[in-house]
Length: 319
Image (cartoon, rainbow, N blue to C red; front, side, top):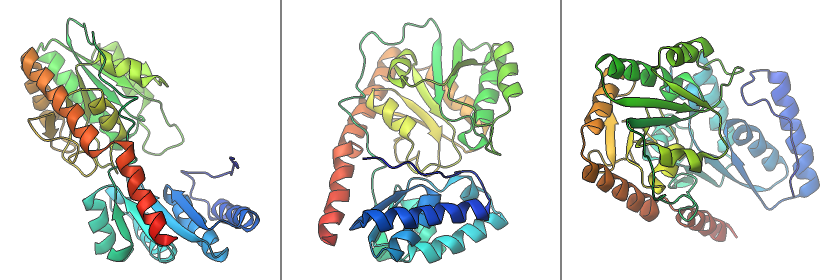
């Protein structure tokens, strides 16, 4: 069954965070679990402490290190110290790429024996499958699927699309995702609306049926600054799509450069444009082979059964 809890994922109020911790303490005292598994940074911090108080074992999932770890700031130092204290009580900490694991070791957030690397959150490759009769657009269609945040590379994507348009490239750049106005990294609505007005961008809004949108694109783009493991790339790859992404943790592991897509330099709209242009110039057979390689790679390395088996293996060791 599901128990709702109130939590402000972007808030920085210590009072509200203390209320979240107290809520977790009461919840676990009532449930008395043997094992608590947490996801995202605030539950990783506060549910872990609450579990310690209730004498339950804890598994933490770090699905991505977020904006705080991308840029140097005072807040990063505070979060690192809080993680060091809280995660010291964890049995296992599941991370989604080698770079994040090394960052944890370098910052002495956790010990090596605690860390387990898994292939993302897993993808149901029986659900996300290639669709026949896919993109019939007269132009090459690029699609970016993400929350509209700066660190997802939205600005670079729009600028790359603008440069391609100025060069007369026969392309369309689609953007699918929701604005997050409460997030300080949220992309400006005016910027998106201006790009749409200039016919640089086609904004699709948010969609809960992404499986119907991905087949309409020729290539999926994600110039993100950092990921845990990009679910967008996993879903698109599982559906047999070529991929273009920044050469950063959480993306570079999914793309074998030149085989199922291209890697570009992070925060570099010019290099992103060049990689998109390189894809445009590929013939139909090369694009198809890229899609086949994407599908094979996701099935072999990222299927949800592989990830679930890893979790279950660690739970069996604990019990």
